[in-house]
Structures are given as C-alpha cells and as structure tokens.
Image 1: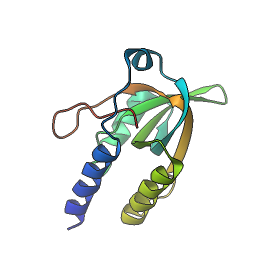
Image 2: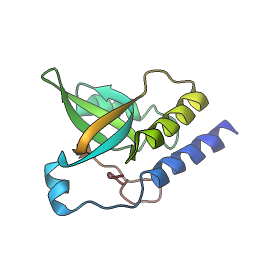
Image 3: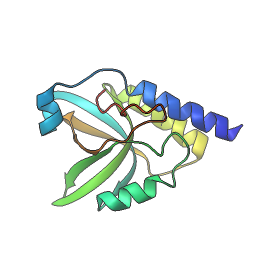
Image 4: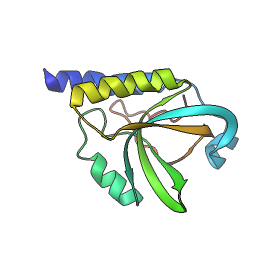
Length: 134
C-alpha cells in the first residue's frame, strides 16, 4: 500500500509541475522573468554528482526530479526540486503532503524571481522529460 501511495505521489509531482512550457530564452538563461516561482526542495548538495547519487535513494516517484542550481553565500548549490509552482500556497500544500506521508524533515520552499537554471532534467517514468516550469 505504501508503495502504491508513493507511486501516486510521484505521478502527482509530474502533474503538479504543470504542462506550461518556457520559451527558448528562458531555457538557455535561467533566472529570467520577474514572476516569482516556488520550488519544493527535497535536497540540496554541493555538487551535481552528489545530488544525483542521493536522488537514487529517494522514494519511487521522487527519484526522477529536476535539479536546479542556486548561489547562496558565494557557494553553488544543487537543489533537487520535487515540484514547481506559481503560488506559495500550492507549494506548501505539496510539502505538507510529502512530509506527512514520508515523515521527512528538512524539506522547504525556495522562492526564485523567475525560472531558476535547471542543470539536470531527467525523463519521467513515461519517458517524457520532466517539466521544469510551473
């Protein structure tokens, strides 16, 4: 039952990410636009390889999340994002569901002004690229 719910939540992530697409300029530059974007972050690492390795241990449905790059205090971080939203409320709803189901601590909502730069975009279980815009 837990595995089935885990798969359901994974599908929810893919659906919640939306079907909106971004224009070519946003794909190449990242951080463009002024509309806030809210990312549900389930992990942050000092290297892309560490982020990918850690993701392989995540529950089903969360082992194929996009990874975004961020700068904080002069350091480059690689954030695994399980959801991308236009509103903070939607992001918090996903966070609460995830935290309650898996009992995780340490997840958070990251607000970016515009789309963050995606450095790893995996294919989902259906073979399609995981959406990287809200």
